[in-house]
Image (cartoon, rainbow, N blue to C red; front, side, top):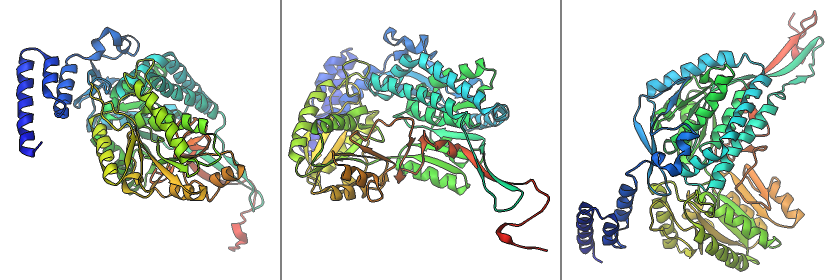
Length: 563
């Protein structure tokens, strides 16, 4: 079709749509558009499906009855609910329908939240750490009682399948348990002094008000990782969730606020200011936030890091990951295929730990690729509504993600790649695509070197484990990595100084699905921050080295005499 005839066809389609819609026939209008007018069809589908809010549909009664949401919700909380900013519509990515609305905050609202959090800090920090831990434990219990409705909301607003939605809420519950135990073990050190009659102590104190900016793909867990640990350390928090998942932010804050109120604690210990980039930039520039935790893209994280550093604040960045799963020649291939399918297509490829590159040893390349394609063929039939029990793959989050998916595959094919499986947009309401396997590209192709937040995996053939490790480490990000092998030599090379340079280094498990007990985060362009377990708590506190002279003399260090 020529360009001019294409325009004529589009005009004809629009005319047909208009005539059919005026006659009240949406299905006929959709049929009239023809397969070549995909964008028009998608726009028509969204318009048709968005006529009534899901919150008023009896199928989604849990939104009102169990989570306390309304058709329009205040998106700012400082102990009371309010909001003076724009009203934002939350749309379900599985069907294009409006879920409900949130009135966001403006800069004045944000400042009110910070001031309230500062005031609340004085009473919160005065509580013994174990008492703070007990309140956080109760937050975990309250979340546990809302596990299913909150999990459904995550599925509805994010698009991840129900099991993953519930699993995300469970992460917050687990972190609350972890933080409760941590509240009794926050520890400094006693160090030997070189001076008689002196003792050295290492002491930790809270920072004050901690800012948290979370991403759409884990709208509850990331907030939980940060807030639970920050709270037991003695901090109060200001939270800005992703603009497209603000219902999750509101529903979660309602649960937390209920526990704080029951314990006679100011609600402003955990404030919320829903909003867009203006609120995020204000947080990055705000000297009242000694620490800002940001989860999101590398590009935006870089900008956030610069703004925070300009004011000599601290930043905790958890950014992108171009993660590789390496399969050595001695690997258990049954294990490999099961792990790779979950790591590549789980959450529709929208985890920061999703496997983007599958590096196969030449000896087993063909066998793994054949089996992986067969496995993909099975899961492709289970793409659908994330709330349906049999669904394994939900939609992408929005139209921009679908376009990125399409553009990336076009670039891969132009660069010499072959789409072995999937690679198509599913023409249905919502943002569904087929997970894609791409072969034939060199390891250093530009499209392979960048992270695409979609279910696309590049399969690469390596001649040796050493070569595979070099390829693993050559990308800008350094979040997650995995090696499948039965060799102890290979394992210890992989986890050693000449192995993976990532923050998460796995053996015989996928790149995704981290536990809360370890520190989560990565190196290089992933940002260097660590959240959740291990000693991540130190990032939410300031360290003091204390020297106490309990004697009568005044000896100087290093034997200096000043007499």
